[in-house]
Length: 224
Image (tube, rainbow, N blue to C red; front, side, top):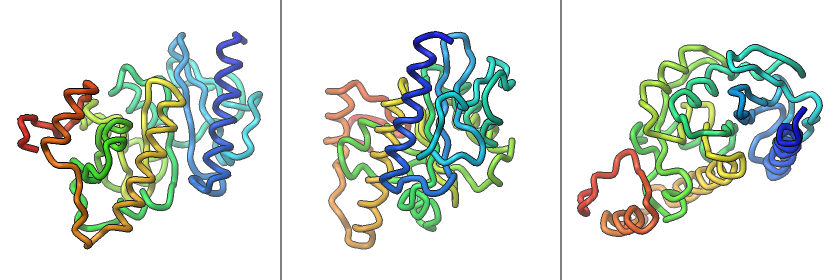
């Protein structure tokens, strides 16, 4: 095992424990994966609590998604596969059952193309925006087609009645973006029906120009 793979195994366990201890993914819910340089993955095992992962038992898959070593992988492999295929720059994916994001996924007014409004600059800077994917049974291979249908425009998707799935160029980046999505979902629920003041189109344009953001639904020119 390379030093890089060993380090990534430890990082999966460390970030998983942090997410679990802060109540962001209860019980044995949620999963984390990291893509390796050889095209294979490291992924958390099925029915494993993210708070108690063992680096030696992390599932090691080859580039074809076949188990090479470790415990049986999460049933959500189709989900991870589709997002990696759609987001070629992605190196890690975090999927949680975080309370506020799941709650938002059930609300009738949610726009599938933009689940949350631009309440804060960091929501846009971390996630770029979030799409809603219809409900699928956990582990259903059909979810992969729904994610591919987004054509790689979103690094963050919210599975209806299930939870967020976020890709990042590093595991740290994916974790931070997932946390930002959850906090923005919490803000949305706190402010719902209170007519909050979100960022204006001009303020969004400024963020895009200053930080070089790519936002799925951004048209520029202060038009939305």
